[in-house]
Image (tube, rainbow, N blue to C red; front, side, top):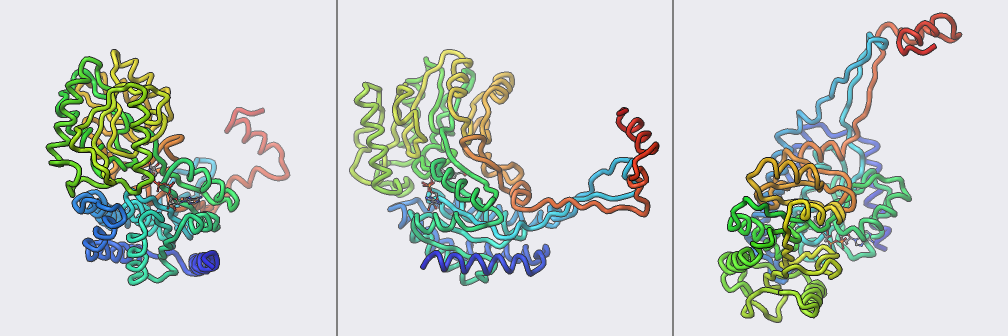
Length: 466
Ligand code: NAD
């Protein structure tokens, strides 16, 4: 049944994308404005739905970390669209003159977007913005773990857009699998590496190109010279928003060994200051499901059993879906907290003696989605940037590289492939079509055939080839 509905929606978009000309700048801008207005007009309802899905998600977080970047991303695309859409003149070699070469940025056709639960609005709307700017038809499959948001978003989109242009399809994992099997012109997936592999396999059947926005363990390195309190402030911010369920949250932190205790003390104090009482505080978000909370509890039990120092405040621990901000000092590399992306407010703190040692640890792992470095020393900055790679970096802060419309956002290796946002997003979801227009004289064809003296002369003069 759902397969038939999916196929019907896809077919309608597919034939529209093949029959109608590419939307011009003003139609694209209009669609973007509709989307922007829809988000602003329904901000409260969207926040309520997301909070219901989480069993408690701070409204300020939803507004500041989802709605605001989504709306600003759309406004940026509307402003820049005409410039992005302009044909790009390309140089032509002398032997092909007189002629012209240029690139046209054309829609790909039908783009599929599969989005995760952790920032359900932003991670559906951001790729949707880029896809609409690029003139595509779009089908969105939001996560089954945010049913209230998914249903509301589907209804709102259906109220403003023709399903031939944009359609949202809520549903469970079976729907997601059927969705990934559709022969899209591009499939844009945000989620885990495990599901990313399945999505890429399904796309391969149709030779559908993919963008994979995945996760991983993003390290934070606090250099010797950097004021500890300031580093704590930023790392706590990046780790605590959405209770650590952020793809670019600092996953673990590397701190000069003699500063571990001072770091831990300041970090726990910052948690109490930011979220007084912590558990029960409405600004502090819940963990998405009991299953996810159980996983975090099991990870903590494992390091406790292994004899690691586990630091939090007794009064914060409660049998609810909120998870106490917790530090784990020097956990072994084999434990779950150091093997998998944590996705919760638990921060392993690892002591290091030299920067070489810190970099060796980062480089012994998969290339991360983000890297955070705290230093005022330009030499240290250059050394870390050139010796440890990642999808993106924020220096002396956390998370903020994702909010820059002028920067691409994406991973490298196991943290993802392909980047989006702003101009890069427009280019990712457009086809850069090469156009070459022959001038009044086509000199190249003078050489032959029949191939003779002129072609041999040309080979020698142009390429030094006998
Ligand atoms: P997930 O991979 O479990 O699910 C993501 C989406 O895939 C959901 O919509 C789900 O319905 C769908 N899905 C599940 N099985 C599928 C299948 N077999 N075929 C097709 N689709 C399928 O991820 P999640 O738990 O929702 O999100 C958490 C993960 O996402 C973390 O690893 C996190 O780092 C990552 N993430 C990455 C970014 C980024 O921008 N790089 C952003 C947010 C989250």
